[in-house]
Each structure stands twice: as C-alpha cells, then as structure tokens.
Image (tube, rainbow, N blue to C red):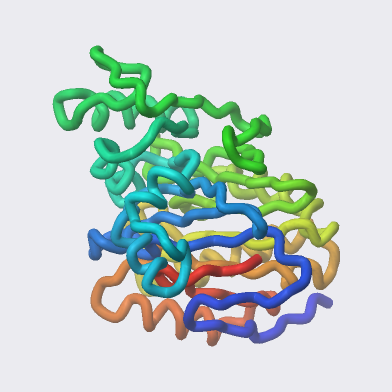
Length: 315
C-alpha cells in the first residue's frame, strides 16, 4: 500500500543549503499575468558560474533590479546583467507574459541566442519581431534582419549545448491552449539536471500524453538523485472550472500529475526533489487559496517552494 504524507510547504523562496548544489535560479518574475513588472522569467546557471540563460522572459529589467536589491549581481546595473550575464533565452511559448521582457529590452541587448521549438519561434518572428509590431532583431522572418538574436530551433528530445554557457538543454513539447505548443526545458550541467515547464495543462484535461512522456524521461534522473529541482506552474485554485483552465494546472491537478511521475520513480525518491511553484495568477485571493490547498491535500511528501522575485534559489 502506498503511504501518503503531508508535504512540507515553504511559503517564500528558500536557499536550500547543500554541499551538492548544482544550479542557482534567480526569479525575475513569478506571476502568470496581472503584474507587468513580475511576469514569468527565471535566470538559471550552474552554481559556480555567472553564465545564465533565461527560462522565459516575461519580465527582465524590473526583476534584475529586485535581484540586485537582494544582494545578487553586485557591482552591476540591471542593463549590464542583461547584456553580459544572460547568454540566451529559452522561450517556452509566445504568450506575452513569457516573452514581453525579451521584446521590450531587445534594443539595449547584446548579440545572443533565442532557443525555442519551431512553432514557438515562428510566432516570435511572425507576430512580434515583424516590423509591424516591433523591429526585427532576429536573423529570420521579415526583412531587414537586424541579426542581434540568432534563432535556434530545438528538436524534441534532442540535447544541444547552450552557447557561451556550461549547460545543455533538451526540449519536450507541452499542451497549452491547443493547437499551440508550450515547452519543458531540461537543463544539464555535468551530470546534474534542472527541469523547467512552461505553461501546461494536465494530460487528463488536455486529452494528451505529453506530460506522461516527460515524466518517463526524467524519472531515471530522479532515481539517480541527479534531478535538482522541478519548476512547474499552478495557475488557479481547485475551484476553477475545467472549461476555464485554458491549459493550466490547479493544486489537485498538480497532485495528480506528480502521482503519475511518482509511479515511474523508486519509492521515496520524488520527495527529495524540490517542486518550485510558478505562474500563480495574482487575482483576488488566488495565491492564498492555492497555497492552502497544496498544504491541505495529501501528496507525496514533496517540498513546495514559492519563489520570491529577485531572491536566489540554490538547488
């Protein structure tokens, strides 16, 4: 019989002290809309490096300013961090709460790479970097090309190096507001991994097996204690009707998906992986309800972390 435990809930971001820290994550934006200065964006780098990538880029400069206030990136301005420390952008999907910071800061940025699935990259260049809505700072799409950003089209399940960093990435498609794709990014440095999921619906709601396929892929790293953290969204409380989820998760649906993931893992291994909750919708008392529901429901003994804008998380 499977035993269940009440999870340990951490209600703000946390520095997880461990001699085995492999990654550092700086949240630049934690919400899924509602606050334009705090939208989905996470800088990630190996623990001993200052060469970061951005996992989505809804907010950049405002989040970096908060990070500087909290003691990160000492001696640098927000613009210097954008120009020098961010080596590339991994965009999970093209909704503005995940891409607007990239677009708005592009005139002041330096040459680097945008990594995305082809369907996501096409929207970025067709709808945003198109001269109709913004100058085309990329190397593809509508001419003239300003060639500041080089678009790298990712292939599903194929690992590639992240230029000018010590990391590699593998992309996996997610279901979010069909027919459009979202993406999960699996970062690797040396033999350790970090998983970031963009917006995603539950397989049961989306009538998909994309999350199940992802869970099968990452379970061996959990069993080997090589997966250092999972960043995954919970946008709405459980009261949100299924027809109004629009490709997002609730605490109940997260529990269901983690149960599927746990079925592919050795007993007790999943609870050793921190689960970082992203993309909460700051509407009414949604956030308080989500936290309460995660605390009350019986899950698998996992540790939930609620990130704080600008406060580094060591994993």
